[in-house]
Length: 334
Image (cartoon, rainbow, N blue to C red; front, side, top):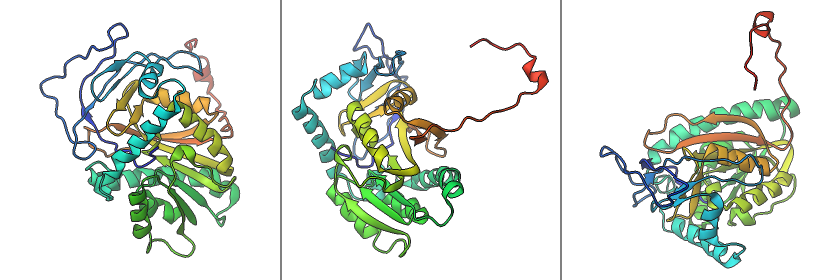
């Protein structure tokens, strides 16, 4: 399947999920504007009401696909897309995702769905987040002179590696299933970095099939690619990937957010999940939410983008001393 850079761009529409009327779509207002996203196609942003069960192992989240069909649950959507236990259909679903990206130009504008101008804002937001995490998780605990290694998942043409990761890590491994993107990455990174900061390995392997050496990485960076994985493969990937991390290492997941529920893209075979949907999956993976940050500076017509830092170990609790004045106030019972 494809773990190439997932285009972060869809325009605004108004869709509401009704459990008793699967195909009902409330019409968008006449002022709605539709923009191209990813390249050469049009799509509307879907707003869905979602219902989450209290179970950590099942989710009743409704959503919609890019053709306007509504689903009463995630399970219903996956049954329609890949069947139940049908490996042939699932394999084809992944192949179709890779095929879509094989038709996209190997350029910044191409991998960003025609929105190449958001590259700077994206990198700046990621750098602020990364610097804080490195200081808290690695430099303070291990020391400033350790040899740092990062895995860039869905690396595409090496955009994030070249503009960010290679400056902070001694080695960067790139993981990308689209061969033309990985070829472009090799070329783009040929003169980047230095002897002590370099791109070391280029893996042309789908995200859901990748198994590297144990304990190699300080950070595993997952951006605009995890939407191509089914829920089961999402959980399976992170469960395997825990073993790829060094002690104290962590994941960074940076992804589009559906306002509620999910949005299935029928063209590039990806799913945009909501924040509650992501957090439910993270819990199933046994990961702990260490820190989050919203990406700023993107055009309003685009999906919101959020960064998650995730750890295998439980983050320490912060004990705060309340003042007597505050402690004596009436409190809401939760």
